[in-house]
Amino acid sequence: MSGKKYELVDLESGKKTTLDARSGSVGPDCLNIGNVTKDFGAFTFDPGFMATASCESKITYIDGDAGILLYRGYPIEQLAAKSSFIEVAYLLIYGELPTPKQLEQFDHSIRFHTMINETLLRVFNGFHYDAHPMAMVSAVVSSMAAFYHDSMDNHNPRHREIFAHRILAKVPTISAASYKHMLGQPFIYPRNDMDYCANMLRMFFAVPAEDYEVDPVSAQALDLLLILHADHEQNASTSTVRLAGSTGTNPYAAISAGVSALWGPAHGGANEAVLAMLEDIGTVDNIQKFLDRVKDKDGGKRLMGFGHRVYKNFDPRAKIIREMCHKVLGRLGQTDNPLFELALRLEEIALKDEYFISRKLYPNVDFYSGVIYSALGIPRSMFTVMFAIARTAGWVAHWMEMIADPAMKIGRPRQLYTGPVQRDYIDVEKRG
Ligand code: CMC
Image 1 (cartoon, helix red, strand yellow):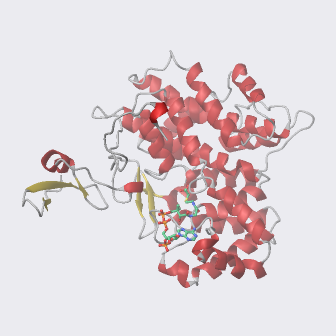
Image 2: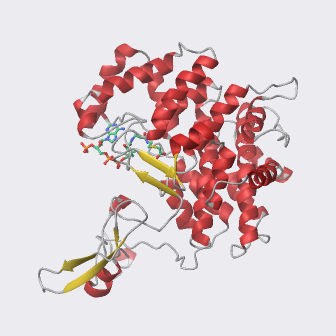
Image 3: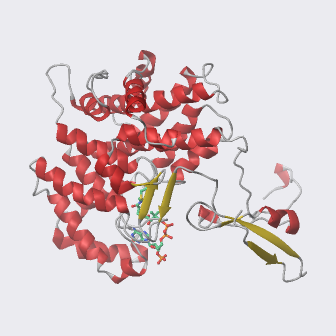
């Protein structure tokens, strides 16, 4: 508790109740609203969780006004410059940066859990070639619950740790299998001598008929993108994992629920939508016409990759990715990438426009990520899958934090009911 107290008064009856405030280590206080129901018999109403903290967490902190993002206290800029995705995953899950020995052991464990059971591979055959890869990834991750059902006891810390390593290791393998299924190419088995991102690129792009050499620039760019997407506190998909996990369900099933929630265009699906939007705009000359449609509320269009529920300032990840676009495209010999040029101009024009200024709409993480993914040869339909691979680290960290908390409760929101009041059933022949 912060020691601060608030008083809530029923203005009709004069009845009062006291709300204690809880302070975090940083950020706004949270009012404990338990007394509202106890003393007034009322619920609080907050659709879309605009002002509600759904849980206590020590993993990630965002200051949306200042454009700050910290994983376990470490600024995203420092992690992006100095760390690796595997180290960041360790940090998110275990709470501290690993020692060299811990990092080596963790990296080794992830490398040696990459294979998936052959029967899981056969699940892909149930999908048509043009199935969206997010649907396949969600289904196959969920199928892992069937494989690891009896051997998974949520109350056993070692079981939880094995789950964490397994899902992190296998999600790139599953994602690559979904890609190969789309292409009609044979699945490429993982190689444990390769690091996380190099192995992933190989599983995506190698074919049995010829050698494939991983481009280190691409692997490094991918690693950075995974760091930037690894966690973002209680976003829609993470909250979904927590809500599903709070029932005590198998954690693979909870992660699958997170994959499904991520897919939507307001969340992880935005990176795919940004590329579609850029291709739709086509040239710089069409930008103003497009923005006019976005600003017309009847136009039904949004500037994808812009705006964020929490950031009312630059998304720090967007700044890093924009800079990285310059570097990566330069190193891949694509300095005149037309999509990047279009995105830069679109950002510049939107940021000077009163509509976006007054609503504090800035580019978010997804505005530039698709440009890099397509420069790496990753097709548009796989963009959200790439996001899911990265966010698996965050989902796992949140599930582990929640499940280890002895005070964990099933998530069960209430509602403001506006349907019919009680009425009597009418026999069918007497209706109409
Ligand atoms: N283009 C045009 N107008 C927008 C946009 C946008 N991208 N985003 C918000 N607005 C307007 C919105 O119409 C509203 O205007 P008004 O006050 O006149 O009604 C105002 O800004 C506030 O918007 P909101 O919808 O109440 O904001 P929200 O916090 O509920 O939504 C958001 C946040 C991310 C869903 C939204 O900004 C959006 O749809 N952005 C485009 C999709 C996108 O890029 N999503 C990725 C988010 S970051 C990665 C992730 O979370 O996965």
